[in-house]
Length: 240
Image (cartoon, rainbow, N blue to C red; front, side, top):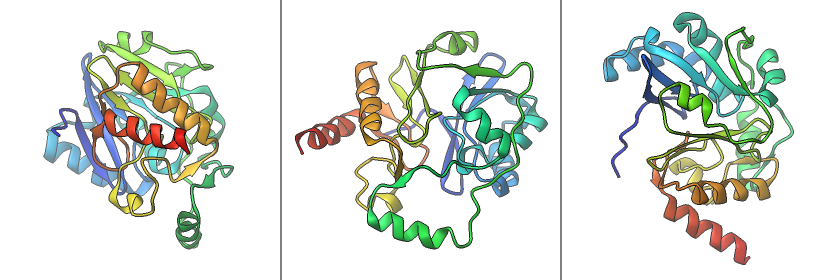
């Protein structure tokens, strides 16, 4: 399956780049200490300068998605696009702690991970021109203004501020609402997030991807995969 969208993988996270008016829309960042690696890969792999990034959209506020957002926004001058439910945590630079592990194996592994990792990052302070998405309404105007056809939809379940991007070509960028990384797949996640707040809402977001014409899922963790696989997983979960 060929990925036509550009991406830079830093640490565990894929940061996607979509061509828009006058530059690029970047979907998510990585951990704070991944910034220099991101800049190097951006230049060497795609010949893109940091100033070419005109917009940054955060699918949610966790440190592996917003970790170097503050630094990137300062250096690029990009406009931030984020859901209103992310603002409090972004301002603090701390991931929320009310998610639970999907299963016992993940709980065990992250109990060890937590011994040497702090879920913190430089605070992201809102600026006048940043774009705040509100409520649960679908938004097509923001992408339209960027020269893109598609929707930004509110998809909680992993976090309260979760958003997903769906383009008219069927590309779906779910953040962590769907995962496909081998190191998580061996833990029997079956495309689900490793941490959840509400699994029912995760499945509802999958249904929305399908109903809105999604074709290919581009997860933040792992390889792109067909929406048909998500349909199969969803049907199995429904029959349990």
